[in-house]
Image 1: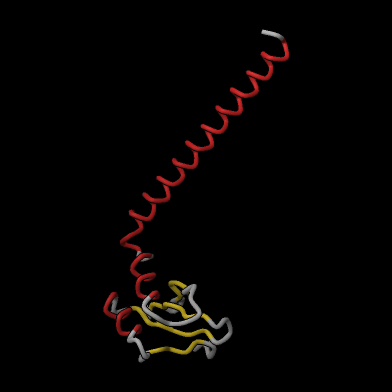
Image 2 (image 1 turned 60 degrees about the horizontal axis):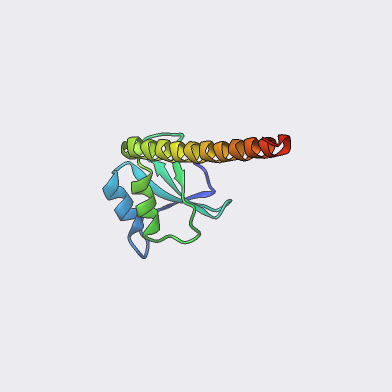
Length: 112
């Protein structure tokens, strides 16, 4: 048992209960060494699933859990792919503009 991890079963906003409703294997813990809330799987020894990026425990933890669940991985990967394509299109457009500017500059220097 890791002494720096405190299992939270009851909290003011019932976040632990909400997380257990999402998945009965979920357990909310507080890490006293890092000061962060963590989501663990009670069925596994190496149970850390995610570390919440929030200093306070509130409903954002529930929303974050829904957003990062494995069953949403396909949606998350699709969004990442779309963003990567957008970035690549923007980089290509900037490169084309730069090439056009360089060609115009070269033509001007040669008096064409």
